[in-house]
Image (cartoon, rainbow, N blue to C red; front, side, top):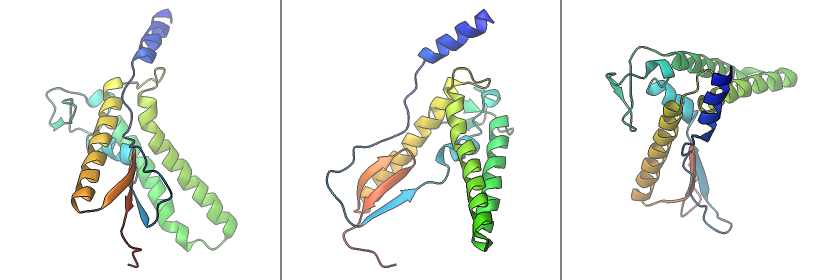
Length: 180
């Protein structure tokens, strides 16, 4: 048990760089559109099969950190696919629910599935978590930052101004109110 506590103490000292956050533009802005990426961190973990037991430097899936992963579906991917699927099933049915109390209950239930999925990345970097893996957590945040920076570059290249970027979303200023 002492060895385990020492390991946890070492892990707590290992920090990773978090998600991308840009400085917001000053003032009250008009004609802003929010683009939010659905379940970005869980989607990254699924797409690259990021799980402690799938790390394999001979693996076929290479990440931007240089870390490689096996193609064989890992535990984290299996869990996250289930969580996202359960949420999506409920979200698809929400518009059909007429009873207000049932709607609220189902909305909260889908929100719980969302929270479980989105928090999975965080526990990968929690020093006492059984599946703790700094490399996996770091790969998630670095990939998220990379993707968000690419999206901002693309939007700017199209001639629009990104006034804020935060982890999994960008706020874009348009010259006029869009009616479409």
